[in-house]
Length: 248
Image (cartoon, rainbow, N blue to C red):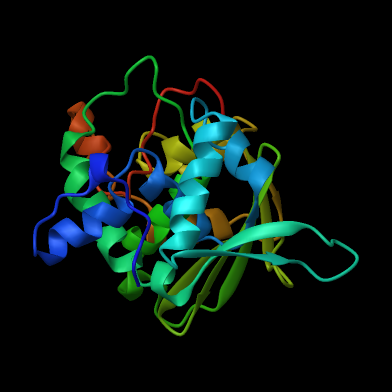
């Protein structure tokens, strides 16, 4: 589908990579698509999730994505009645490319910068890349995570996983924690037992579910006595490590 790409960002090369970058190569665009992989979102929620984008720039990016047929607007049925943005089939088709980009980009994470922000939504997209099917063999379990004022569903069934933003349907376990704790657990700098003992995780349901979850989605734990380099602990997510909490 033809897009309204402006001349300032059009590469004018007969190349699939160049054409793709004409559509999604602007700043913030891929991060908006990343968030929308978790489901439809309201404009104000997209704005709140990206400090620094500004309302005018967000509106411009969404218009461009709509024009390209990557994003569409719809109105949720009553009682919500909210107008939301969601990915089209063309937009959803970007997931493998975004996952691959995140895996490649993980090598550049290094130690967190003081200005970095931990973005909860990024972690729940990253889980799709971190999922270890062998560790989930025979497990059918649905988790609801409450991270600050956000709620997410993670479903494991049949050797596959799905993640979405919003309350879980009939969750087996509900876990409440802050994004710092989620990060520490996934990147193996804190064990589930330590997080529970310190009161950093509140669980409604089987307390052992946290250990199962981390076995499926977390980085491998280092042998006792091993001193990890920063990048070794923070390597393998889909851009999820926007570390050193400044907000959430």
